Amino acid sequence: MKNLIKAGLIICLSPFYISAAELALDSESFFDATFTIDSTYTGDGKTYEVSASGEAGPYGRVYLSYEFTDKQDMKDRGEYTGYAWTQNGENIVTASLQGIYIKDGSVFKLWGLNIVNDGKLHYAYGVVDFVAKTMNFEVADIDTGD
Image (cartoon, rainbow, N blue to C red; front, side, top):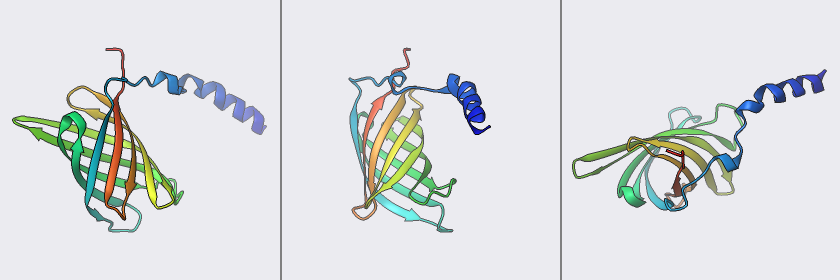
């Protein structure tokens, strides 16, 4: 019976499967983003809020806010949502951030997908070190074929 249920789930969910090859990154768009953690906060010991600021490639000085949660109660991994913004002259650029994290020794590794109000979609991989107060990311545009 278990095998029948597994087979049914695989068949039903296979149209939603996305392979890594389908997440095409624009090789010309890669940039580094380096941030200093400005503050952290938790009111319940389960949800953690982090504010950071730093430099993000073509966007210049960027301010971030994150909320880290562990909705599956896995202890060493979970999910995050966040918001980023920057201002260059009169132009304000904002982004919605979301992804997953895993605690790896003394650091946290993040994988995320971001949508920016300049029309770009970004893939970001980062390492967060709360002791060193750093957040460092490699970011690239997702090639949507537009």
